[in-house]
Amino acid sequence: MVTVSICVGSSCHLKGAYEIIEICEELIEKLGLRDQIELKGNFCLGRCAEKGVTVMVDGEILSGVSPQNFRKIFEEKILRKLGEGNANGSD
Ligand code: FES
Image (cartoon, rainbow, N blue to C red; front, side, top):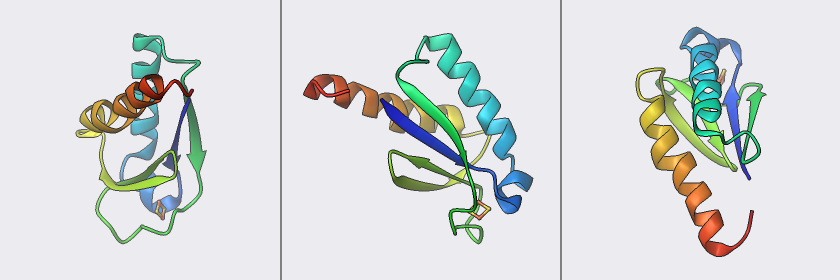
């Protein structure tokens, strides 16, 4: 299980947080990962000054996320983590 928390504080909201949540839900649905990815909204993660939206993947804070680059991040960070989890035999 990978936990994805997308910041929905006002600064990230203005930078497209809700659009990212929609893309994330769409990808989870499309790939059949509902029971492997927990998607949450998070209040301000304290990175408002950085570019883009702040997203936390299993406690790792990623800044500069946008609706444009989110698919790539999903692949590189989230799917990769799921792969590692499986390889280790953990969930
Ligand atoms: S509003 Fe998202 S980091 Fe502050």
